[in-house]
Image 1 (tube, rainbow, N blue to C red):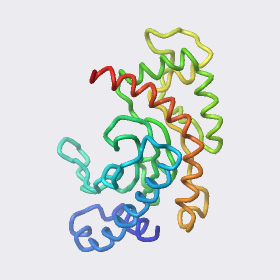
Image 2 (cartoon, rainbow, N blue to C red; image 1 turned 135 degrees about the horizontal axis):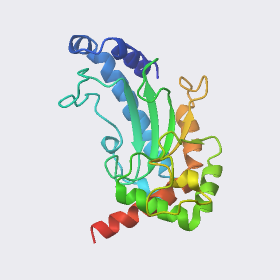
Image 3 (cartoon, one colour; image 1 turned 180 degrees about the vertical axis):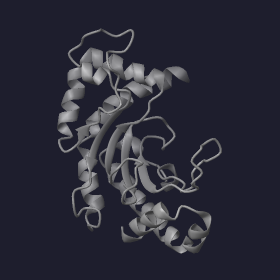
Image 4 (cartoon, rainbow, N blue to C red; image 1 turned 180 degrees about the horizontal axis):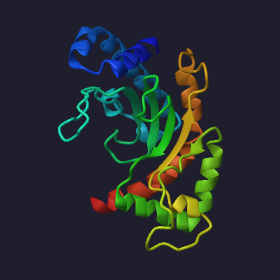
Length: 227
């Protein structure tokens, strides 16, 4: 991980094309390390979640270049790297497993860690998940509890239950979420550990049931949309 973090810390304070070109070898080393970890994650996750079999590294990794066409922030490069393993690849709109790294002091997420679930679902998928919560919210609670070292991210929530749903419900907290993520920061010392991927796989495995519930709701929308 040294190459990854050296590059990310460098680009955080030197986010410009001349520095990047001068340090292209460092970037390539960091990228190759991310690619190697992606291969390990795909292989390991597929052993407990068959829905992500046959994914390639490119299905699960991202470009370092920012899209600045319509942004007031003209910094050309991202200051984070991540691997997102989910059914049909990162653009599918389905729940999955995300390993994230960013430069020291970067504010993209604010930590290195594991994230599992569904970020920014479209409105139809969000409605489908909420309907399932109304029907059997206890299943979601049980799934969250099974992912014992993860914390439910409630930072992006409505202040009251959404329109067309009960104004009061046993699982108000879940109904009000705009996205469904479980979060776990990397423990101290794990970032540079030889057992990072092994540890991540064990932790991700505990969130399988949570992702299955989300993807059941998401696939219902997907199948009806394309039927």
